[in-house]
Image: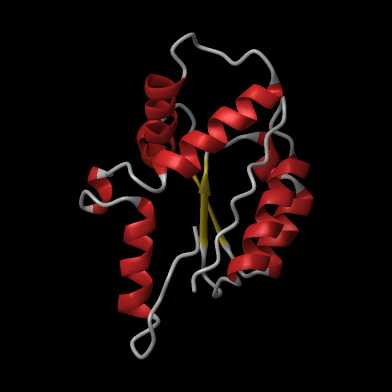
Length: 147
């Protein structure tokens, strides 16, 4: 079984502490192999000493898009573009809790489960991940992504 964390971390601002919490949850759950590439924009939180120590601890490589070049971060830009078009008709949420609830339902109920992604060969992220793990890690056993 491929472990998935379905907790959505959301705050009013993107601070290093939120990034570290999400990174810690992901690495604890998935136990990545050395060489994992962490790609981001050049937000200040990605330069923080604590976050960079985490990357070193897990032997991750840090990759950053050039400033003012959204094409180098195309998958993230695509997610936010789709999310705004498909979820944010009025452009904003009324409360942080509303944002959390609606984003969780969108991501876990639609985007990761049912939405077909051209970059994944017109598969959902869940099905793509299942296929990837079955092909690369579980030749002798059945693999399942928990949902």
